[in-house]
Each structure stands twice: as structure tokens, then as C-alpha cells.
Image (cartoon, rainbow, N blue to C red; front, side, top):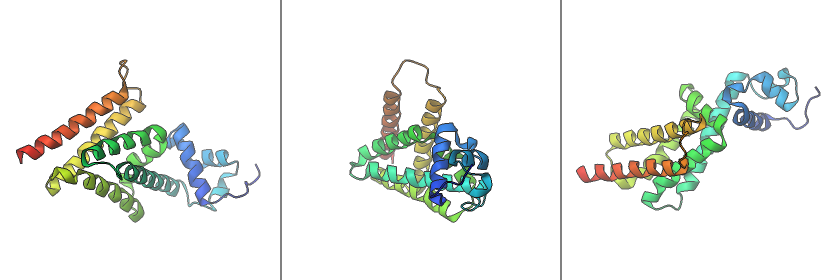
Length: 192
């Protein structure tokens, strides 16, 4: 294999992300990435320190992509519609970038890295902002963020694994889930 011209850090991470989305996150190794880029594995070490850094960078890239997608989805949405738009954007991200999403869900929480933590915190702060109109106390707001993430991650994971075998629209199921979550937020507001 001859070295590919124009290979740089950005290209390595982008190609790693494409490979993860196509083959699965854990299919991305130094060897598989080198093959994908048509270079020898040692050539990659000119751009990354190793597999651990590659996985960290894929997780970071995924968190940043997800944040920008979510932020864009809620930018001009009304208070209640923002929860719907954020939720739909989250699931859309998982559908389009399953390998990168896997990095954000499985690798990012275990990495002790300031950049990864900041990217993760940005998403939490964005969701907290979306939930502000429901006037939740601080702890309950964080529980609501966790709850919404659990709902969306569970739905997206089941969908990815083919867990919805009934002949019903998964988009309608997602709408139902979000509507139920929002109704719960309204109910919480009424009881406090």
C-alpha cells in the first residue's frame, strides 16, 4: 500500500467515524482504519497516539455533532415543541450515525478527559435549558434530563437492534413517548 496524500488528523477521525457508522464502533481498530485509508497501520501513528486516542476522538466528535444537531433543532422552537424537536433530533442522530452514537454512549462516560466532559456537559445544559419552562427544581430537572435520555436511548437502541417487530410506525411510537413525557412534566408542574 502506498501512503495516501493529504492524510491528516481530521481525515483520520472522519474516516474512523464513517467506518464506525458502517461497521459498528468496535469494528474500528488501527488495522481496519489503516485498511480503509489505504495506508500501513504505523502511518496512523503520525496522526494519533493509538486506539485509545482514536476512540476518545470519535466519542468527542460524536458529542459535538449531537450537541450542534440538538441545538439547531431547538433554536426556534416554542417551549413545548422544543422537547419534541430535541427528541426527534436525538433519534435522527442515532439513526444516521449509529457507530458514532455508540462511542458517545459507551466510551465517553468512561473517559477522564476535560474536552469530552465539557462536550457532554454542553448537552446536559442544553437539555436543562429546554426543560426550563416546566419550572422543575434543580434536582428534579437533572432527573428529567436523565429520564429523557433514558427514554431516547432506550427507544433508539431497541430500534437499532430491530426490537420493534410489530407493524406499527416507529415514528408514531416516538411521538407517543415524547408526548407522554411532556404530559408527565405538565402533571409534575400541577402537583408542585
